[in-house]
Length: 471
Ligand SMILES: [Fe+2]
Ligand SMILES: [Fe+2]
Image (tube, rainbow, N blue to C red; front, side, top):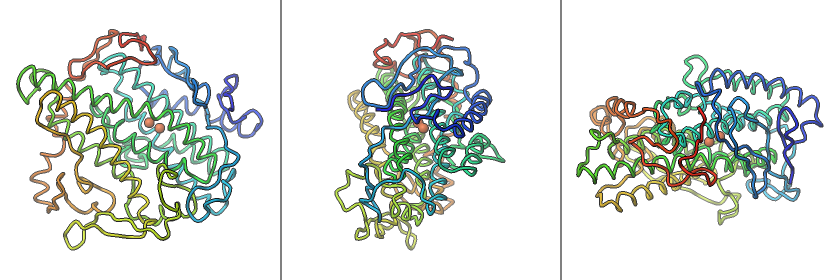
């Protein structure tokens, strides 16, 4: 196992001290990152001490240290999972040949683009969430927000390291540009749509970490398969951190559902708004919104780029080794839904053309698990309702349904029908205002806002009532 050197200005396990040029370049970038954090990161709380985890190793046992730190003092660093010298390419035309430790010239542009697109999402989410600290439902939640934020900052470091180390001048320019684009900026927006949406309230934050961060999990999982070994090892370690982000979203929404059904039972009503809760209908509409914008992140179902990435070993499927096929896919077909003659029609194509569709389908299955858990909560409280993911064609801007209007239950409709009914399916301004009105900060240890149930346990064996943030 490679240990992390914390005596360096930039903590790392890539022997940065042995590469003076690279070290100098990254040390030049570091103050720009700090400036970006100060300007575009969490508003306020720079002096607060937050109970954060910091990576201290990359192996299974005890990879993180927990302790109170001021966020500007967080030790962002470069951590790659250990190298497996035997590793070979697991899929595509080059399956079975050794993985690459340097970037092959012919794939330089494609690999740089994949890294830049991933890298762009990391600081974007920090920017989107920067105002949330002032309305946290508890110190426990506030700490989780900041944990996610500092780790997204670290993920930016992960991608910037790859750009600086392997892509020369172009890479350094791209690393600078990652700090110049900003979420929602009309002139220099982030690359992907969902990362330019606002995250105005904590329900949106939990939905974002559940649905949008989960896209990140699937993209990182696909890049972990990459033949470019440093990218694979980088993504492998990022996924370890990402698990907590998934937890924040899943448990956050679960706690809101819990609180809503408690209020429903207690007051024998479906409308819990007068009691400071969030109605199930509203939660479903938030699910509809966040799920549909997150589906767009997977790109077009049918994609020549994705087919080429798969063929050349740049980007695989999530959990590639788990697939019971030849991992080459030249003799395989796959089926996706698209609109043919004004009808939603299953359409079969060579599997390589539908790699994005496959990744997205796995994502959908994963999303569904949370809904099943929340539905279990409804059943346990005798509530005769269920949450459901909307149809894949609902509210889409990318791919086969980008130019069509589809209801959550999969009915194709015209623009007028959509205009008449879409308000039933997406959060209204009034609902957003109600959710916004609930966002009053709760800052005493162990206290939790009334619209969400308390967490079932604390962080790292600490009690729920622990002072996770010292304001
Ligand atoms: Fe991330
Ligand atoms: Fe994340």
